Image (cartoon, rainbow over all chains, first blue to last red; front, top):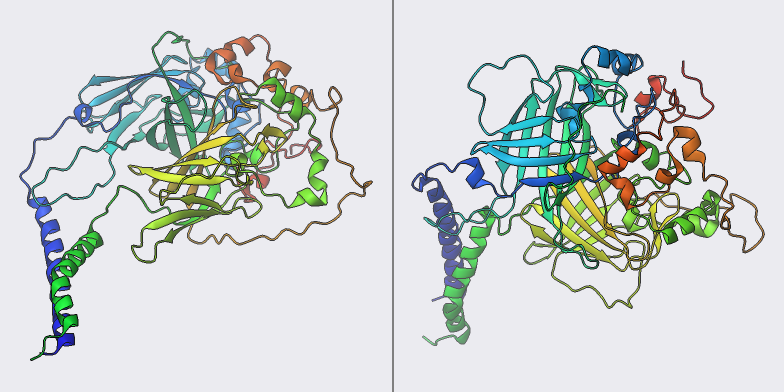
Length: 269
Length: 324
């Protein structure tokens, strides 16, 4: 018997068998018995509930104070947007009852303030803001009734995104994901302002957000264990933007609502 | 037939080989860890703080920074022309700042030649060709007395689909491109997440010497396969004739730009000087009675990237320009 040919046969057989088994095991995965659907509240891979404070370390000059008329830096506006924004008149907005224009969904997360996030029910996250006293409802189901008139916060559809985890073997339950993020898509928006000084967004605006959570284990310092929520936001507006406006907002978790300080919308401040 | 010892050895090893090959075959179709591929060309989006990140910040603009008095004093001594010194012209942007500056990125993994697992992630494109290397092989950070560099020493770990990294051994540098200092005791935590074609890096800086609390900022890139980040060699030249040894600076109390931010944007000086208190919503209420917006934006009024589209909008981009 030729030793080399025997070894080669063993190796070839091993490769064929291992590839076959690997394929077969994966092919079996979808055949697992269907498990009852777990409600989004129970399936949440991360806990977003609680009080969160906006930490304004970026775009300070455009967020903490109302910038000058004509200051459109960083926002990829087109000429139509500039023409519109150059006519910004906050007094006129107030008189028209439009003082919440800069508190719509594409802007509200940039307004310095606090978020209070709770589960309204098993399939709806409620995000309240003290600045402007707005409420966003992040629904995990398509609305069953026709949408009414567009609103400042629009209609938001939410979905958990969880990382792929290794298959443990045929029939083994998938471990519950310990990590993940929330994807939110928002449309049906009432036209408003991306920035307090009148940079407009239109009723054609759509927004996609990714809500990511981290718990810190710093190498130095005394802040270990603090939680950060970073919301990456992509605003698409064919009417007023030359390209998607992509930003990310940073919130730190607070122990309670003792600093919650509701304040109505203001067109001027 | 004489039994060949080598053949016997082969037969004895056959089951082991089969098991290893099985495991190899399995890994072809299943991820061993929850992680994502960060590799590619990533174009920076300057949709936040464009004036600071591209033209450059105002000299005494410390807004939104949790600085202490030592940091303010050192930053006040910074004179912009120090950057024209030949020995400083090619210095890489220090890591606590570099991802915030102009930074189109090329990211790739360094692979173990046997397992093909990433040993490190390489991120290239920040100013000064200081490649950010994130070691993924579980190695320890060096002794605290080891060399400190502008890039520092970084290790990483996957937390689900989030790459979390820790950087130490960073040389003294700056947090903002206007001289706001960072010390050699600075450490940085990063969180990298990829959502489709959007890449977000959250950077948290700790500095017991100059910061009173962790400083966070997050930046965004989009996948751009047509981008090609290349090396940009830097060659120092004499830009300004000076006496040997002269280092541009301001002595305490002599910086003439202390009030520039207030003059331009009407922001009260106490806010321009930064501090942790100024980062929180309640501070906005303190400003309410002290701030009146300027009648009109006078410079850097449009801009968001490296294209010329903003210019075509007719926005003011310089202090002396007139808005058409």
